Amino acid sequence: MERTLVLIKPDGVKKHLIGETIKRFEMRGLKIVALQMTWPTKEQMDSHYPKDNDWITGLGKNTIRSYEEFESPTTLIEDYGTEDAYEIGKSVREWLINFMTSGPIVKMVIEGLHSIKAVRKIIGQTIPAFAEPGTIRGDFSIDSPDYANLKKRAVQNLIHASGNKQEAEHEIQLWFSPEELHSYKTIQDFFL
Image: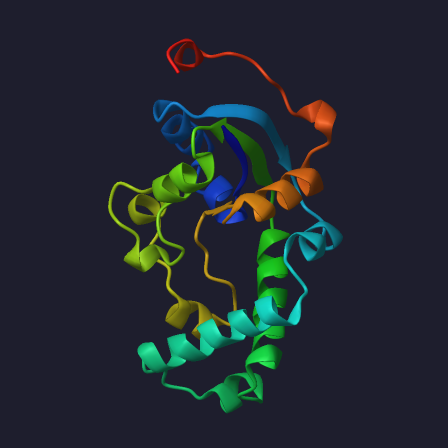
């Protein structure tokens, strides 16, 4: 059994996808063990997104790659004033924080067998334009990095889910107190 954090982002809330999202997890046999709507602060989102050089540089490298892949009509110098991946990553991280604080989110902890991978499979690829039909992102969004870069904003991809066990543990502790996590049996528990 694993636990993972899921955040329905402001665009998912504004598109009325709260119930649909929960339904898809529960239909798969996953269990919601914590659930709350909140409007996150910049401080909370700053704590949520890593600040280490490698993570920020990775954001920048992904942005640089998207400029090349999508043959952007503008250059990195025109849009960011630099081609340095770390500096570009800092801008993208700020866009993420601004996006995540632009409206309410729904935060939840999901528990189940291999829940980290199962949840990520249900929500689909990070870039909605390439997410498979049948996934949350594939069914309800079409956003992509090239369009987001033009608008100088984060990719609006409806939902966040922890990427691995360490990330899940950190994020669950960040968003929920131990008293807010509930343990109970579902019908599936009797057959596992």
